[in-house]
Image (cartoon, rainbow, N blue to C red; front, top):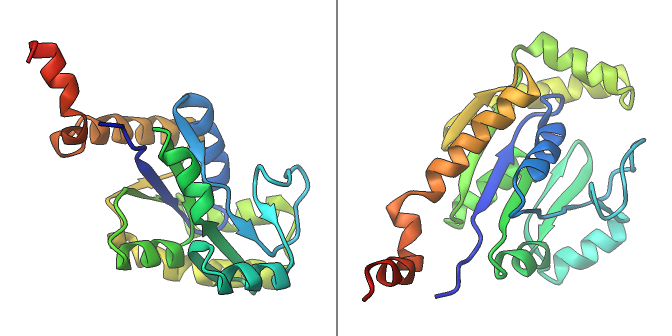
Length: 205
């Protein structure tokens, strides 16, 4: 039986280090592909079209939404974000594990449809550190930062929607913790059943 990739869903408030963590995971896991999301927000310095996001207009996003192209979508800080079925399926069906970088609205959407995967929430060491990281980005106004902090506090309240919660004191530590989770989850019998042919071959059956 053909192996299907495992979705790894990473959720975190803004300013938590989610994007940096996801990039490091991609470097450490050769079988991991990122399901690149679509967004209507402006591209930031250092980002690449089609790598960090597919940056599109609100009109294009609405068209894709109306065509049911998205597995999940959400409006966050007055901008739209969405994960397309194409971004997920094209790699997963070829056996690659898929990394989905979502906000809590996306997590709720997937949970409501009983979407199977590993749900991990990354938390900041403190709200003060979260604010410091947002200011360091230099891409938001003080008003925007206050809005993100307020939203972030609400998102943190939904930590129980996840299977695992990790506090991001240091990126490499966080990456190692996620790697340990992924290894353990992929070794579970329940996930290994679809590849039982490997066991039969091992036993000469």
